[in-house]
Image 1 (cartoon, one colour):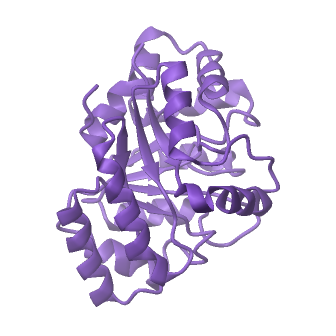
Image 2: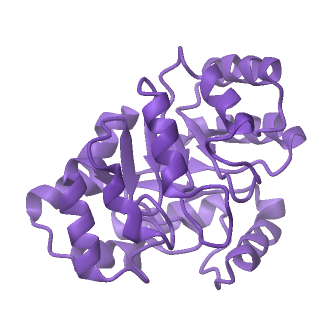
Length: 264
């Protein structure tokens, strides 16, 4: 079976240990990897993962151009499909200029993390980013959900998706990490997709199936949140849901191929 991992974090080798340690502390979770590109490629090859959508998050605006340059440098690796980052402290002119640069670099979308970047998803600081993306076909992968904060609640993602129907959003972690009970509120939103990352280690299997079938398997994509989790275990967790061959094909590769324009 073909597999695309649509939620992967990577870092330059020089800072990979520090970055992974910081994420582990943020979530109070033991990281299973360090986000080095070589480790990712090895894991992909060992587990039959053909492509990975890779990203990194800027926690300050001065990091944006440097991270986007790093992500663009990964375009030469045929297995990787790199996304750009943005930051809400950028003004609208800086954002517009960086969007133009992102397109020129050939990056494939945008990754936002409202909790790490401390902005309300449906607030003014976030909306100026969505305003700047109106004319560009750049899918937006958004960390969604966290009961500890008031930044990325599913209802904020839903509000944004309704206000920007021309944009394509991926609401990560079944639409709301630790707030999975709200997932079915997305029903009917044609411009929102979901990934399976950082959820099935804790989410009850029957609830996961209810959400997938309630929102439609054509809306879900496989994701690991590497290096937090590893390919082999996350593949096992999705297969254990016993969704059927057709739904597995949609989730493991077909939906990502269509949304991101990835060829396997």
